Image 1 (tube, rainbow, N blue to C red):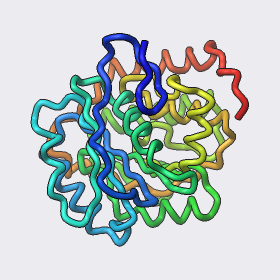
Image 2: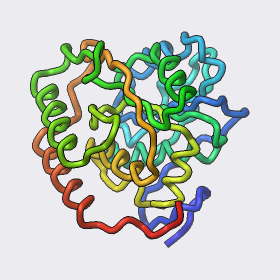
Image 3: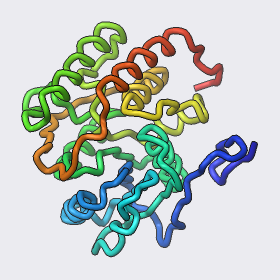
Length: 274
């Protein structure tokens, strides 16, 4: 057992993230991009982020999750954008990529900062960053870009992906009764850093245990113990900009959702003061 620079314990032999050392002070908006073999899509997305009016306030944390296509090399040379690279030597899955991105950003962020997680495949529009920050300023702790509010649109996604997200909405909505949440599986969200710090202090290394796509639901389930205010804004999913095939596996993800619900009912919440 060893402890890393962020105070997280790791089992002997466990692959760990390698973080490129910061070269300047972070902005007050942190964007975490979990990426696995996204060398084609990532430069386009980073360029879109660099063109936003918030670019000088943003620090991007790209987590290269054991990619074999040069994803890590594709993040260099983005003009006008502070990009930090976190590297997994081997592929550990979306959940662990999110976890590493959160750890790296939280190690540099101030409590009043905002952290945004979004997909690295260029299907999410950074043009909605101002609307997300406006919701945070208005009092929200979590802002979800949602397919299920007025103005939301995922018509470019494959039919099976749309069915999965709608089925998850029905099941999780009935079982969890989480006020303000209609889109449980959206990977495009903003969080108050102060909320994530409280949740990390409460859950420790258990904050994200899922390795697959169920990690986004898991994070919401664990954050709810902090009593957050959740707001949703429309998500216009641009699946037509995705250059490759989906990495989501339907059967595996369904099993993960079922096991997650079971564990949520059976596993005790860590007894720590919030």
